[in-house]
Image 1: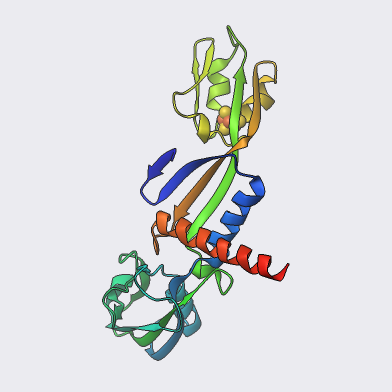
Image 2: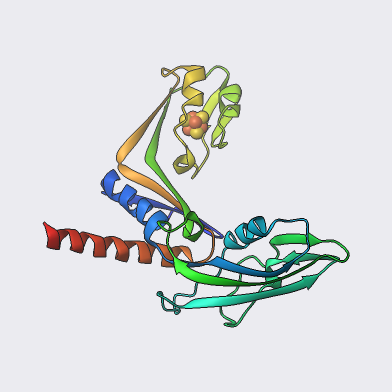
Length: 245
Ligand code: SF4
């Protein structure tokens, strides 16, 4: 674990083939089950928002998916009945199962003006990214571990070179250019520094045996659960392939 900030983790994977890391990434995106609203029955909508847009907004709300809930056919019904003037938030959706609720209660669904009203029922179901991207539990990306070689001795324009780094990991102090302590894994290999100063001053390359992987959860599931679910889904697929070969 390189870093853990709220819902985001950064991990260092050593000895992993890039294909395997990519398989884990794709499995997180496509094969991990979460709950999302999938069917909306609108009984009343006198707001300025079309029914379809309202339903689409509800579908995109991240819903807390407790690992204790059984995946499968089970569905969860939310009710919403509001009259304006009112800012209707995700927390106004009431589910029959009190463990199932929107992750971010303060997400705005609609601003109702005086006299406007909505009344609806929304059915949430389990699904994964193959069904619809709204079920995808996280943003996942990876890159090779960066290697930065800086010329020894004085570096002309060190401050300017450091200022070009979009992730602010270089330190340009006088004629000295260094990588800030503990910041090396954050290099995104953009080469903006090398393009400006030349490879004889600063050379960027990557260590293909080490991979930095980032998982930023949307919080339906915790990051650890996302990884566990993804690895177990990947194992199941590999076993199925093995049976068929
Ligand atoms: S390659 Fe890009 S991110 Fe890395 S140190 Fe240079 S400017 Fe910064």
